[in-house]
Amino acid sequence: MAALADDVVVLERGAVTQRGALAELRAAPATPYVERLVAEGGQRR
Image 1 (cartoon, one colour):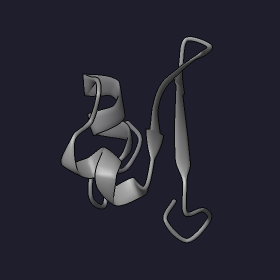
Image 2: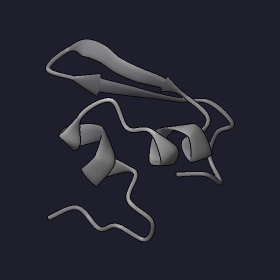
Image 3: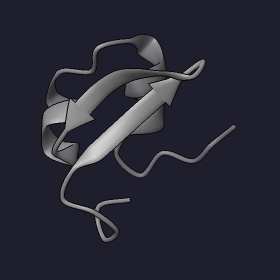
Image 4: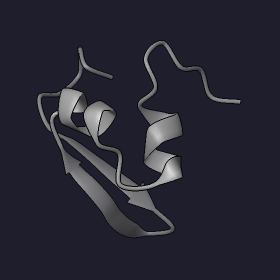
């Protein structure tokens, strides 16, 4: 994900949940969904 963009926008159920740099999202995820999505080396399960 980081290789694709400087700014990440996370949509959850059609609404913007969080926006910012990947490092910012990883440091302070707004929801458990964001946390799972941006986890270091995380794979979708």
